[in-house]
Image 1 (cartoon, rainbow, N blue to C red):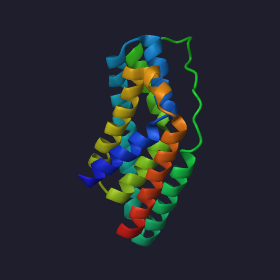
Image 2: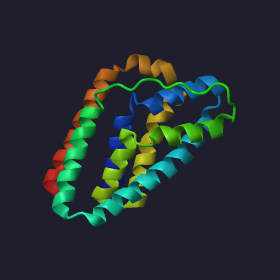
Image 3: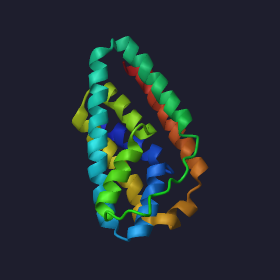
Image 4: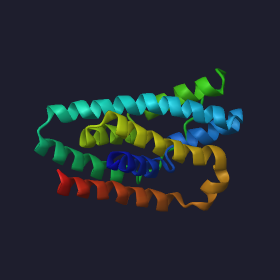
Length: 184
């Protein structure tokens, strides 16, 4: 349960103001099909984070506990600092129309490749050595964060200062690094 909760909290915090949340806003404005967009986000995230969790578990099996510990600490501190840099909204190709579900699935899967959330999921998979639990937690975090964008949209984001959200998420990543230092 700890791996699900920590994965959920970390991904939720890191997704606030992230490019995928901005993409969710663009998609819901473009297609006006929030449930279809959420379904696309779910499938893309399950696939992407499932692969990332598996990769993290594999890396953990190859590294000594000491190397893994210091690698995870460095990654989480790095992610904490990285999250302080705001993402920019990426444009969707308006010339092609594959429908709300397929567009969301492809855009979200590709947007998460190499993203801090995917890399954090790799690290979480290495830390907890549980593909299923980390995938569940990280997917729930993505769904909540992007669900806020899809269903509450600009009204909510206008009221939340993104700088404060990024600073809070930074502290959360660093807190995870400190926990790793004392746990492994």
